[in-house]
Length: 317
Image 1 (cartoon, helix red, strand yellow):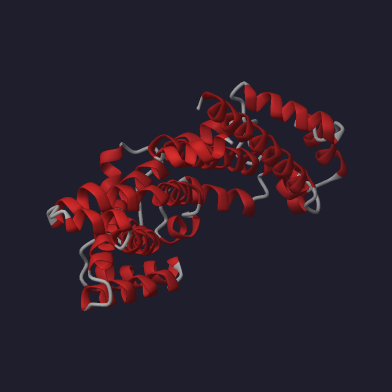
Image 2 (cartoon, rainbow, N blue to C red):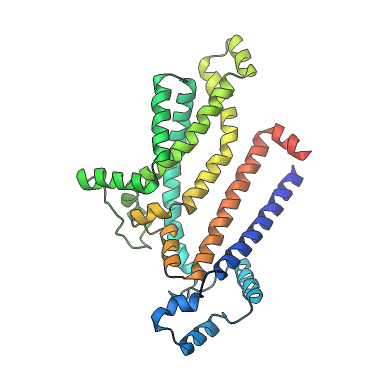
């Protein structure tokens, strides 16, 4: 077991290193450079030369990569050329805001997805299953910005229950953010629930027709115990990785939702950085999100190994 954990950790670090190389080389391959993008029409040979010298853009690419990578290992993500501030400082509150939104959406969406998935699985081919499955397919099909726009129109414009967009500062206390995240949470929950519940439904159907469940049923085990003590835990095992990846997606993939609702999160910050060609900021955000994605996937993988001895035995060989 320890060998498997060490192997997974080494693989995670290698993956993160490869991602850092891809991120750096990919941004370097873009036309122009940060100095040209920042100065725009105001660029002169002298100003470009001075800016490139200030930010080390004249150094060879391999030196800049290893300097950047070394800074990351020490917790230094570089300096934003556009905002003239450390990247870590710019990301700080924005990342916190996205984490708040992610945790809120996960606390609502994951239990709801499990409940609906179990109900649909137990009511297979009946009207609750048909209703839940149809609704989930519609939720999966609609793009996030379309769902967000509909919710804004209904609940913000027509009913005036919630604000349409977020109008608070980036560094406000968390309590001040809460009234502004109801519609974003509903939007993210609809997308998240649709994916997770379908997997839970499928797993629940497979588990409930398995031999050991049939044997327990013949022995007179109560239906509630069959579902919650024997069926649900086994149905949830394959879902752990999907839940972890969904949370990672919530942290890094909500840029469109944050932009629609003007929410001061890391996704909206990244879109602004790409628009401004603020490459140091783009690189910093990409590395943070990649590290979180890998970490969550690693945790889910290890949880699966711990909770399922069969996987541990199979992978050990």
